[in-house]
Amino acid sequence: IKLSKKDTIYMVLKVILLLIVVPLLLWKGWGMYVDKLDLDQQFKLSDIKLGELSSVLHGTGGKKYQIEAASNYMGAIKMANLTTSDMIKLSYIQCFAVAILLLYLIWMYGKKYFHKKELFFLAVTLSIGLVGYAFVMLVTYVFSFGPIEGPRLASFDRYIDTYILICMSIIIMLFIFVDNKKVKSIRNIFIIFLVLFLIQSPGKIVNCIPSLSSKAPSSFEKHANNISKKTKENSKIFLIAQNSNGGYQFYIKYYMNPRVTNLKKYNLPVTKIKDYKKYFDEKIKDYMLQYDYLYLISVDEKFISKYSFLFPDDDIKNTNLYKIENDNNNVKLVKVL
Image (cartoon, rainbow, N blue to C red; front, side, top):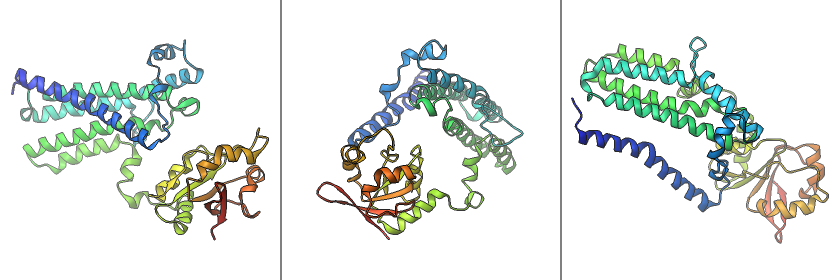
């Protein structure tokens, strides 16, 4: 079936709506939500300087860690394996090439069920999305992830294979559509599912079958269980995890949801401060008073020696839980047994 000029324009408008307008509306809406709640943001648009990107890519501008992040990212896009099988190793670009090949086979298999250029436009749209998504992630790693997570491409496979999953989901739906139009063939569906299974991220597939992914409770889950037994669901928990990067705040919250945890002040300084009581009163106290409980995940001797004035006794150790009380605008901790 030949597309009319009107249908072509309509299809282009739909692509613009889905790829540009909807993402912009979601981004704007999320920004308004974050501003309203006064939340900290890891990724701030003000940190992104697109004018410097070219010089960073060429190694002639930007900070050293940004140059390293850009170089590592460009290499990972072409070479880093995203597949499940040890026998089949495919990068982001190679996975997309497989997706386009499967799309072509679907067109060959059921071309009469599509408009003449319908799948061509879909391939072009997915290709534009591939480049756009890769560009956004490049900019994010260079300007937003910082000097530690940027160069080491933190969670690269988890972020980058998101777009591949979208492509493969579309292909599965198209194949089932064509297969149902022709002859309902379980064998054909199984074959294409097997191909997609081989090139997907293993964690996402295994998680679909709880019995395969079940394991002994993690330390995060144990901490969450300790807290959950002694607090209410609407409680706000101030977690202290010395010498950590803040991961505990997210992982423990996941297991004790809907309780809220602090996203900063979890790693209190233990050096280069003359008066720790004064520092606490000026920098920590007001923030801590917003929470209902204090829980110690990981504290060391330095922390204990510097902040012992906070605690009701000398028994300061990991897994202790304290009720936070406001005593004339001062923090008073009462140990929860």
